[in-house]
Length: 287
Length: 249
Image 1 (cartoon, rainbow over the protein chains, first blue to last red):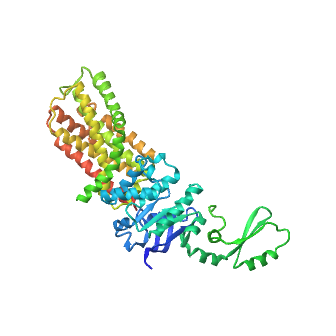
Image 2: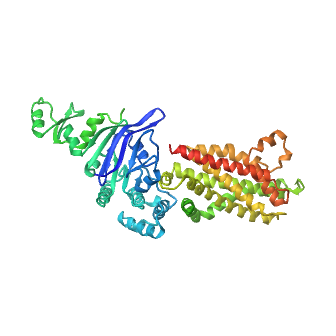
Image 3: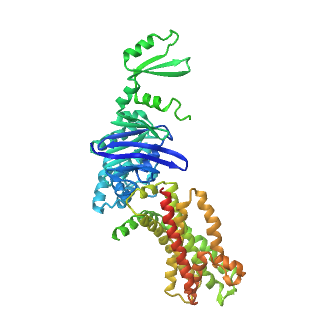
């Protein structure tokens, strides 16, 4: 299978701090790849390096076969990037933001106009095309950013936390949009810290923790490593203990052996979130 | 070559869109200060005073034009880029497009030049109501355009370096503001002690006002000053590249 993104021992240091260390990652053509990690794990740094905004301290990256350090302009033509924060020009309206992107990417005027009209319809912003950015809702702003990133028909789309801050309806619309983009052949590199989002969307995920890639594979494979069934036990009415078992039988046997005073017990299928918590430590965000 | 021009236009286009929506407001706000200077210093304080054989009003108009060209271009080029980088955070989008650093720097500089020329021409029209300029020659538009480029490059440079809004306002208070008053804009450098005059010759605006004054009052043109002014422009332009490359590290 063709690799769209391939990093080799990618390391990024900011002064003495190592934000990403020896990252080896392959993203295949046509997949939705989820890049997960706690806050500050190195997700955004990785995206900045992959998208030419920052230079790696060492190691190499190929995107669609081009070396990011040596041929950044070729890489820029095949990637689309939706940053985590709002990055639209607030002094322009929706269509103008897209126009600008098309001009910067050398899309001829006629083709640009047609493409923008199609994309506005695709993300449901046709009616809002002449609105200034501050007049849009949060979901519409994200949709506008995605539409803009698609103007030059990128092969691979980087989505950094695309649903953060969206309400449930907007988030589901965003998921549908991501799936539909992917089914049209766009490879998607997605970072999120909503693990259920990665589970719902991604064919493969990588988990990064403190700058290191600590897991890589299909969500089901990763669950298998931890255990397919999870038992939640409320201890002393204060905190929940999670235990993982290969199957329901093992879980049930374990529960039967528990002392009778333990009352609140849940047996359920394990999730990618359990894998995540197991691997990244139980006190994510507190260290 | 053609592609570079197209890229420069694309970078400039955004800011032209903004200008076309806000030109009246933009023009009005940039003209307030120079018109006040003209009234307070040219008409109020300077009435009856003559400098180097000219009425004070004649003397001060080129100075006010020079400082207006400087502050307008610096603000126009610098503030918008600063806002793009730090607040709208849309400058990354430009950096992620296949547009060269050269096109980005020139495009971002040109909006300063456009707005600087716009304000200068409007101010010039206002000035002519008060006093005709004795001997405007072709070196006047040349110097004015050069001045706009120099301070527009400076605006882009400072905006690329500044990490916060405070950095911008510190630079404006500590460098731009003193420079606008002291660089031979309101008085002749021949009037001040030699030591101060030497210090002030390190200000690019000093050379801009010398050139603008000579080309409007029919004095011998200070070619050396134009050369020094252009030198400042070249240095600011080159530093923009260095800073942009470093920011992308």
